[in-house]
Image 1: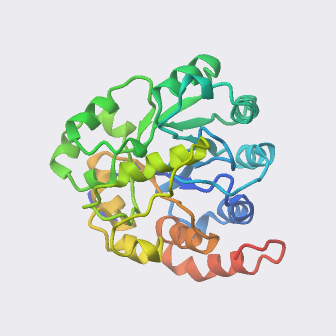
Image 2 (image 1 turned 90 degrees about the horizontal axis):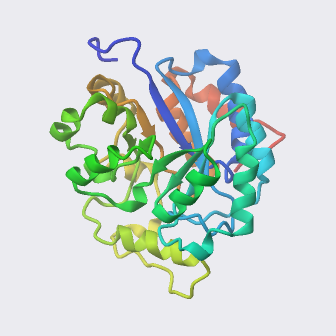
Length: 305
């Protein structure tokens, strides 16, 4: 750790797979709670984000999970972790606000008096609706807005509606501008650590809008990414080679001393084995990697992989 870093600085991770990886978290979180010696003391799990399958308010990536909202909420309540609903469809119109399934999910999560629910959001139409109907929720401006201008990012950070803003990953290494932000704005910035999309990608917004259209049931062709290597899918090793990558040493030695404390780990359509590698890298002391990996793999009550 950077010797100049204050021991009081704490990194807060926002993890993927609230619904998709429910079984994984059911195995991992007891280990995280009962064996703090395995994990870094300077970081914690602040939230887990995701959305159930077939929620038309969803966006960014489609979900294939049918785990019940009640079970998911109970798990987050047990461990005191904020659940976040990824309702980042950018194409929401007034007629979509009455969707029964999405409103029922919100009703379920708004009923908790143990944890506070966040909403990852892109549409201002949906934002206005949810702020009025569910005043207990807090809101996160989604990276699916693809804000690549630093001046526009700063404007987004200043919006009082948002507790957090996830910048486009291509702004991660803009250190001069990042360091110049006011402390209150640094507190709201939630940096996306492990994107493997090329920094030169010019179709990222098209990709997100295509998912939004498909979630709404609109007839459209599936987006085909033109970037080299897209067919091989997400690989953590590839993400680590991305110029925008933020690894654990970067967090400790660069971003925390600079005043940033919130870090988002991207999920996409990954398996539990890849999620475990994320948690080993970002949360787990190296000398305990094998023990944690064995504990998860040998949990005979779950079919995780």
